Image 1 (cartoon, one colour):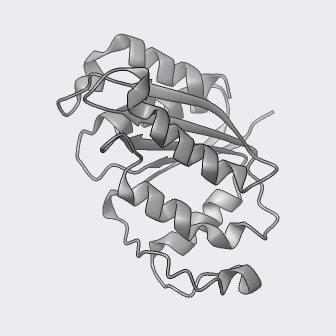
Image 2 (cartoon, helix red, strand yellow; image 1 turned 90 degrees about the vertical axis):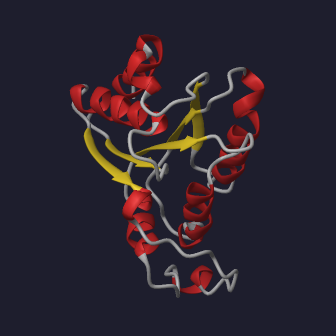
Length: 180
């Protein structure tokens, strides 16, 4: 059965490794017959959450920027794939800001169930992405019907577009999407 898959790339850099891997996952999901939408945060305006909690009553954010539309799409998809560069062993700020701004989804009848995280970092090793994976797990834990299915970590990608040359990471990202 075809799933509605939303892929969100949070890197602001052109030819970013995390976006290259996210596009591979999107391609795999499309080729598996899923309905895929790809959003890059590169040209989006996202303001920080004010913590006012008005969204818990209205299920809408009081801030007027691109986050509201994106969060609506997050709530309306079956599968989420987030892609983030790793900065200081953590998710990038753009993605964390978006996750915070998805607070109106908490009391809603959101649709997503399966969440995936793709990371890319210059440094290699499991310890590099653990904190970021923990941050994503924390967000997912707030949505009791959702689960963090897989974290794909691409390490040793120090230059822009290094992921394009790494056949193993490209294949793993493609398979992630294909096997949704």
